[in-house]
Length: 219
Figure 1 (cartoon, rainbow, N blue to C red):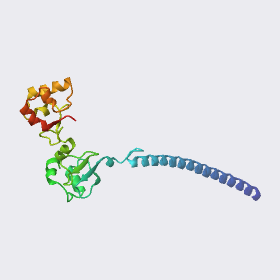
Figure 2 (tube, rainbow, N blue to C red):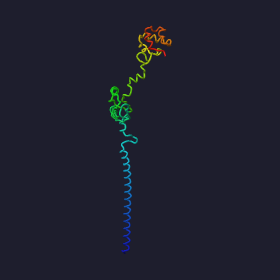
Figure 3 (tube, rainbow, N blue to C red):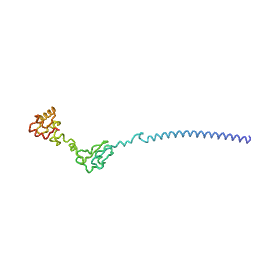
Figure 4 (spheres, helix red, strand yellow):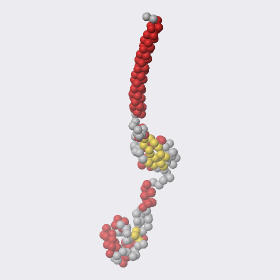
């Protein structure tokens, strides 16, 4: 066989072989790329799920530790009056400590009588430490009421005959339940126009009237 024919056949065979190898390599590369792409997508999805789980709290959920405090106010005779955030379960004594303790004008007697330092605080509580500059509750009550309508025990002026209660009238000297009933019945029939009506209308005797006269009035 001539050399030229052998060379042409060999070249053709080698070309076909190279083409087959190239096709195989190309198919392998395509298959590998497709497989790699699928793997990346799965990993990415897993990564997103992992990030969601790491947060530990659903979207919009506040820190659970924020509910573990109470907001309370310390007022009155404390070193630092104001609003304080204390742990749930704190006591009045804890608030007092947070406010710097008692102030220089604290009324220790009233503290002992009026405050329970072991009482548990609730959110929104206001604790006022008594001060010596404040009137005692009894004094404030007396000032506000004027000790009733006046009369012999109140020191607030004479009783109004047309408005005094039965108990107030009964406290007058020489006046008992029977006389009280007479006074009330008389004023219901016709209002008193003068203290002297107690005599002119035959309600009080002369001696009793002289005792009662400075203690009553008709405004």
